[in-house]
Image 1 (spheres, rainbow, N blue to C red):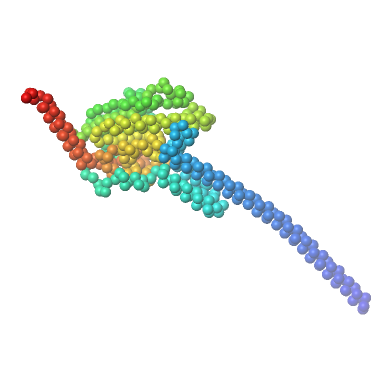
Image 2: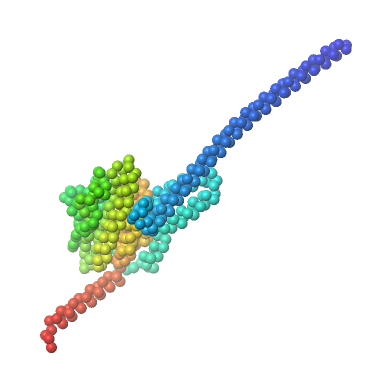
Length: 428
């Protein structure tokens, strides 16, 4: 009996020992697995932390680069840099490019939960945008009248036709359905005979005036009573081996001037296309691109100076338009606001972009008028018939301004007659 009890106790001890060993083994295995899992978790956490740090640094770098570019564009647009400065020409950098960079940087910074950095990025950009973004805040108050003026309305269309790539009938139909009184065309780029022929094919119901090289044209529903080309000091760029030095012997660039007559009223129409083009080795030489960009900035400013001087010599109503190959924040375009009203800015808080036509993000095409006109409307047509969109504006020729011109003319005529009479009277 006692032996049986002893045997049972031994068996129970062995069972308990086996159980204890199993428990111990399971515990050890669990601890080992936990350590292994903890190590993997820590490795993953470290990796995620490193990625977050890298993303944060990347966001900061992008943000700093974007702010520096934005400040450079802003200062350049304000004329801060002299022509000798390596940063001269930064006003030609479209603000749109920096916006994309800012959005990417902002997304990365917000994901990294860097709230202060995000606020600083937005505040600095907002400050810069006030100076350079294409908006009308403060501009409309300067150019718009309190109420619509009385006078005859004229519709104006402007388009870079890209050498009639979409065929003259297609382009002509898209423009003429807007029923413009005046049309300004750029980049016809054909010999005169061929260019005029294609323009006549596209616009058979308009009077047409084209330049010698047929790069630009002015079309009018009203008779064109005079037309001339005005030579600029700049030279036409090349399509190959394009450097400032290689352009020195090329033909002069020019703008064109037509005078139309509506009954007894004459209106000056001018078409200006500022110099553009790519540098030699565009895809492989950043240095040449930079040098060409500075050359473009200097040349466009010189062209607008010569154009403004000519505009100031004219008397009477003036409309001028064209593909200016420069964004609104450029010094060249901003200088034109001294002699004309930008119709898009006059009636739109944020004017529509015109280039490229498929997904436009730049405004390169403009319609201006002197203060004899009041802008009624300005828009960009949705038609894609070129690599640019069509700009369409409606302008009112203000009656009171015209009356002043007529009174001045009568006064001058009266003074001339009195002078003539006094010179023919016999000496007493």
